[in-house]
Amino acid sequence: MAAVVGHFGVVDYIVLCTMIVFSVVIGIYHAFRGGKQKTTKEFLLANRDMNPVPVGLSIAASFVSSLMVIGVPGKKVRKSK
Image (tube, rainbow, N blue to C red; front, side):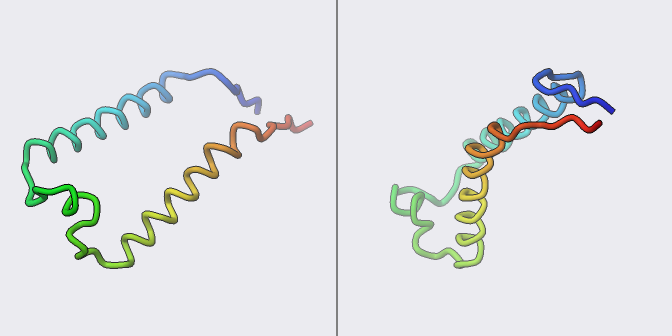
């Protein structure tokens, strides 16, 4: 089975557009919903009321994400014989 690298297919575009629309909808929802975050301190530090578990998971996800962005594009794909 030959894999095509570097070309988007119909399914790829559907997944990409779905993710973009989903992200935009979440952003608009939270923008208009209004929250109790009124100051920069409340927004950036969660009013110092966050549980360490989600903070740790967020930091780990950011770290792994950045490694994937840097490392995966350089990986060569080998064809099996």
